[in-house]
Image (cartoon, rainbow, N blue to C red; front, side, top):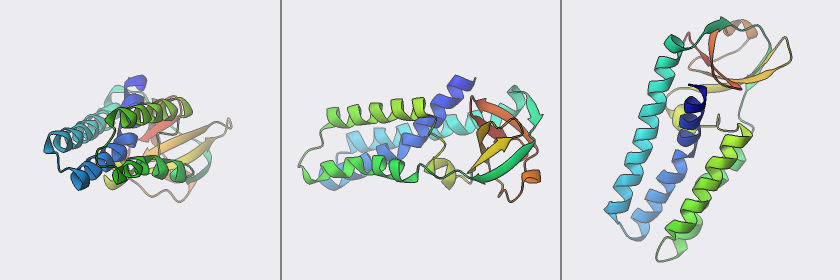
Length: 172
């Protein structure tokens, strides 16, 4: 399940690129044959991701986390925002180069997958999830996805491991 969960988290982290592309298409050509599928794909990514997040605590092992530090995980913000705005660079043209946009999107998915940077996810943020970096006593750092506001180490109780370096708080 962890590779599938990671894939869905990567795809939802890239969803704003598709939304921006749909918006640019609306501004330039108002081509609903492109806009509606793009928005539908984003909707599917979000639904599948929420399904995985809701089922994970029942399917994965739940364990206690003994953390030594907790801090917000928002250090990739600038890179992601730039990637989300790439389709706007194409807006000055009369027609969007979808082949170029597909290449940039696939490149971004590959980079997010391999860098484990997919935790910056504005879609999940809108849905009420927060990301925190938690460090264990073994000095391993994970990203914790939770709906709670974490202020101290003891705020983190039961978790399950979604991906190699991402945990889900099961006490949302």
